Every structure is written in structure tokens, then in C-alpha cells.
Image (cartoon, rainbow, N blue to C red; front, top):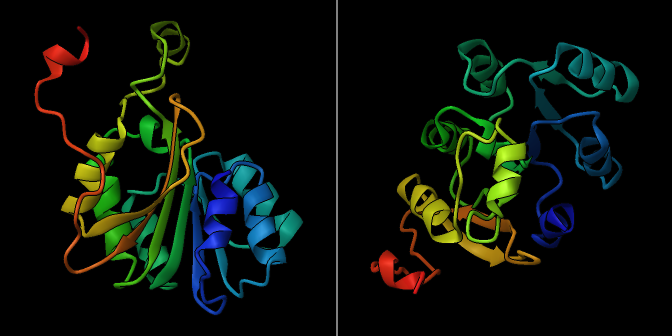
Length: 189
């Protein structure tokens, strides 16, 4: 669903694409097969980063997205027309810093596609099984971070209450689209 959302954005294929959390490179390969000229990935696992680079011939940087060396190398490809991340943000120490650094790699008009669990629909037992989830997000909470760093949600493709899949565009004047609820105690009653 997240990849299909990215394809619907009508991106200029001459602009660079970045995937944060490339795994074994399936999504990167799809972008390359779709005709994107420059496709770059980041992967924490040295093994997976090297395997994808060797197998598909695409640059995949090994390390954490926020690391200075990784950011310096990504700066060589800047600006990215599309940045894609599937179930990564909830594993990061400082999601606000990640979105800030993403913003620095894009110009106005660039897109960010994020997929992550929705805290509103995630059963507590699932959270216990996934202790590496350092953060939980709702659509509204994610949007606040995105707006703070110059992104406006332009499409919500969330398939159910347990997942968030959104596309956001970098803009000079982002506006929220999800309604804000301030009385959280009454939500549970």
C-alpha cells in the first residue's frame, strides 16, 4: 500500500529517491524498475546494505540515518524528490530529529511517504511483542511533527485503524488536515 501511494504521487523520475530502512532492497528495486534515475537506500545492517548494493547495483549506505557520515553522503544526492520509509520511524530514538534531517534533504514540493503502526489501533499485547518500538504515533501526533518541519499531509492511505500510511509534501506553509482532539480523557469514555 505504501509503495503504491508513492507511485500515485506522479514524481519526476529524474529526481533522486531515498528509502530509509532498505532491508533487502525490494522497494528500492521497484523504484529503479519504475524508471527512477537515482535510487539510494540507508540500512542499519551492514550485511543487508552490502548485499543490496552488490545484487542490485544501487548505493545503499550502511548506518543510522541521523549519523553525520550518512548525512554527508546523502547531501551529495540532494535534493530528494521522494523519501520513503516503511515501519522505521517508530524504532528511532528521536523521530523529531529524523523528520528535521529529512526536511533538510528536500526542497519545497518534495514528498515524504511514511508507513508506521497507529497507536490508536495497536493492541497493548502487540506493543509488548515489539519492544523495539521506541515510539507510538497517532495520525494527529505524526502530523504535528510533520507540520513542524514543513510538511503537509496530502494523502492518507491508511488501510485500517492499526496502520498509518501517509504522503506529505514539503511546503512553505503546512496546514493540518486531521482533526485535533484536546480532551483525551473523554475519548476513552
